[in-house]
Image (cartoon, rainbow, N blue to C red):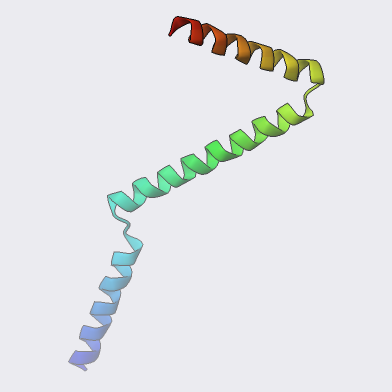
Length: 75
């Protein structure tokens, strides 16, 4: 009977330990959620750009090219 009670207490402690997450695990979960959210936002932006009219795409390319040229001249 004592052995059974000890086993039950041990099992209960193990279950509690699994339920309680360490600070590291909590931070890792937060980081994972943040990365997933950023990935979804990135996909959404990419889809919006694919659906954008041609002149909007060209304007973005020109702006980016202009910035690259300005940075090259500064160097």
